[in-house]
Amino acid sequence: MMANLTKATTASSFRDLLSRARSRGASVGFVPTMGALHEGHCALVDEARRRCDFVAVSVFVNPTQFAPGEDFARYPRNVERDEGVCRQAGVDVLFVPSVGEMYPDGDDTKISAGALAEVMCGPLRPGHFEGVATVVTKLLALAGPCTAVFGRKDYQQLQIIKRIVTDLHLPVAVVGHPIVRDSDGLAKSSRNVYLSPDERRRALAIPRALARAARAFSEGERRVEVLLRGAHQLLDPAASSIDYVTVAHPTNLKPLAPEGCVEGTALLAVAMRVGATRLIDNIVLGEDPAPLTESNGRWSAPNQSNPASEAQ
Ligand code: AMP
Image (cartoon, rainbow, N blue to C red; front, side):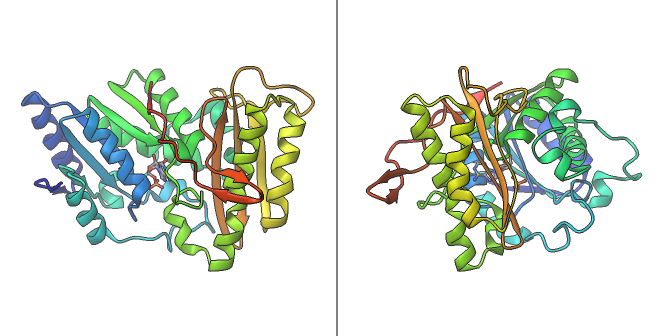
């Protein structure tokens, strides 16, 4: 699909393009990204297209969500390629602001992400979710009334954004899209380009651990300790270091006590390093399909389609 892609680099032109689309009666879909677009991002764009008449994508590598020593400087950037991907995907507006455009007078005003940012990645990446919450709020403020599509790959981020939209009464419908994976199960990520072939192979422990937990859960296992132990058996030998493996409440993200049992559904989330690359992944047990199936020690992609995206 080809569309007439308009590139906007200023906040005011982005706002105007979306306002004009709405005044023509079009519904607006919006997909915020950091670029280096891959099939995961494209699935979000397709979802926005399905739901809306007019689709905008932003590409902005937000400096305030990277801590000193993280990969801000070397984060993959290729706006020309991203522009081609957007054109191909039928995007109407591509917003590529500079840092000065998004933070014209510094970053004094910040959005605090609250309790949802105090668990999982929060303590390990100080300031990260404040940076995310601030930039996403700015982007949604510019976009105006719209349907904004985010990936469940960044599950904690998605819950934080849903909470911001509710608490700040933003005129935005948030849609969470299922995780898009390579055929071997690894979740697509712009950071996968950092992985050496050996590291990429080791990273497969992550979808396999999630798949094992999903299978155990579907067979009736509800003990948190047993679900965690099963995941660690695959993850520990593959990881260079583990930030966390957690079984948590699916919306408030509070970790469940290891000696307890899952009631209803639960989030199983992993953050670990393979080599120097930090990878995150997750599954909602009792809700998401297993990312892989295992038979006689062989792993394969399940031949089931992704579940429908959930709207807020
Ligand atoms: P990023 O460019 O990594 O900041 O991601 C932009 C959006 O794409 C976020 O909402 C991510 O959750 C989403 N996303 C990234 N990778 C995937 C994936 N493999 N599957 C689904 N959504 C994804």
